[in-house]
Amino acid sequence: MPFLLPPDGLVCGIDEAGRGPLAGPVVAAAVILDPAWPIAGLDDSKKLSPRKRATLAEQIRATAVAWAVAEASVEEIDRINILQASLLAMQRAVAALAGRHGLVTPRHAQVDGIHCPQLDCSVEAIVGGDGKVAAIAAASILAKTTRDAGMLVLHAIYPQYGFDRHMGYPTAFHLKALQDHGASPQHRRSYAPVARLSQS
Image 1 (cartoon, rainbow, N blue to C red):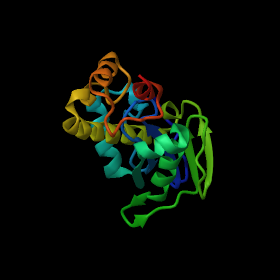
Image 2 (image 1 turned 45 degrees about the horizontal axis):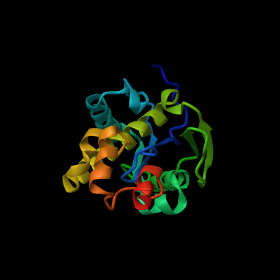
Image 3 (image 1 turned 180 degrees about the vertical axis):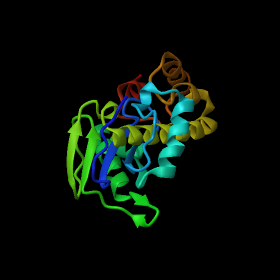
Image 4 (image 1 turned 90 degrees about the horizontal axis):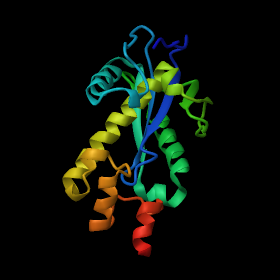
């Protein structure tokens, strides 16, 4: 899919991964691409194979003007809700944007979806942005690969839930594991399938 790169390199794309799962943090990424180093194959991370995502993530980190990944914890998700936690993770990612010469401040940000975080620059929401804007697609890939890697770490700690199979999403296997083992410290108590456990 062809993308239109912004003429000013200080436009960052922002996206998150992990709003739907029952466990683990929500992860956001911010990316400022370098128009001199276009990356072929960028797309919505959900449309890419794990291998392709990993390859593109390496290219993004190697060639972007700046990039950063940040998260909001399970405790924050339960305290302020998943939407606000996602926006908080986005704010943290933009604040952490760094390139070869240190921190970078974008002049404008483009976010996938309909909600915008509060930033120190102008920001716009773009529905389906991870399939329309190269920098948002890149952020989508970094957020997804980072979160998946984190869920594999959690799988090593809590193998009974099968996080390596579903990355925390509410699959039949995951719901059965919740019934059998109860919730782990990394499960989101504010999510209905987990909340129901404490009521049963």
